[in-house]
Image (cartoon, rainbow, N blue to C red; front, side, top):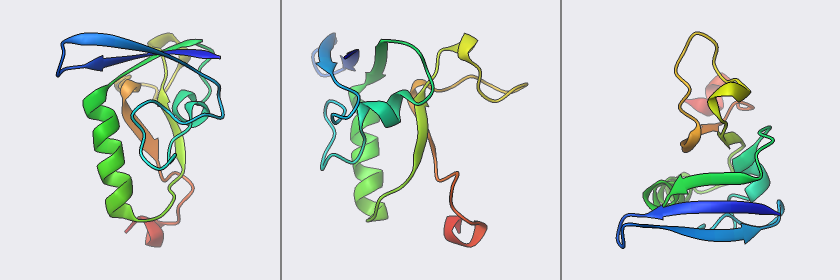
Length: 106
C-alpha cells in the first residue's frame, strides 16, 4: 500500500491517500493511470504529485483517445533517471510512449 500526497492548490494543502499498486491514482479519470504505473521502478512507499498535474494527465489522456504506456512519473533523484540531465520525475512529469515506434509517436 502506497501513501500518496497530492498538493491541492485550490485549498493550499496536501491531501493524503492510501492506495494499492493496482488501484487508480487519486483524481484520475477513467482509471487511466494506476499507482504502479505512476511509481514505476521507484522503491518509495510515499509518492507525491500535484492536483494540476493529475488534471493535465486526464486532459492529455482524453485528447489522445487511447491507452498510452507510462514508464514512470515518480523517481526520487537518487533513484536515477536520465544521466547528465535533469531529474524532473518527482511526481510532476510523465515518461510516456517509450514503447511507440517513431511513426506512432508522430
